[in-house]
Amino acid sequence: DGGITQSPKYLFRKEGQNVTLSCEQNLNHDAMYWYRQDPGQGLRLIYYSQIVNDFQKGDIAEGYSVSREKKESFPLTVTSAQKNPTAFYLCASSHTASLTGTYGYTFGSGTRLTVV
Amino acid sequence: SQQGEEDPQALSIQEGENATMNCSYKTSINNLQWYRQNSGRGLVHLILIRSNEREKHSGRLRVTLDTSKKSSSLLITASRAADTASYFCAPVTGNQFYFGTGTSLTVIP
Figure (tube, each protein chain N blue to C red):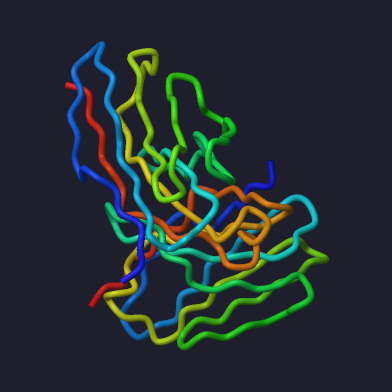
């Protein structure tokens, strides 16, 4: 079955550590996205990528980094510069950025990151 | 940004009743999409309505769009306990869209 997989489901980070969240899709989608969701709040866009080897900052990119070396993969690194990283992180993909408005996003199940 | 704003923030109904959620937005759109999120899970695409459509149905879901008022509504008929979730609208302009804070729906068995 085609889908988008995020791992791990739960992640704990110590102060000062960098951690990487995985996002893999086998839908042959060109565009991929990372969102952050805090309790009682909507989704905020961190980074997005429309094609391989290219990505753009979203609304809250500070303290995060991404790479897009393969079409199927869009990992997100939460760096020590992100002062409040505890949140629920959602990865999404779509056919192409230009068709997102037609087909919508497919979301992964999310990774809950907690700073300990 | 073109963020959807859902209303009410929370809604609690008895099983079998209808649930109506509203969405307002600020600028012209190409289409508007509704998503559902179960607690601790990702969002699931429910339905898309284009800017030239006024009403669309999908099973127990009915979506309306009024571009003159820049608003949309999602109606879930004959609700079930399994409909308990958060519902988000996403007005689409260009290649990206922004989710609001959602409506939290609780259906009481």
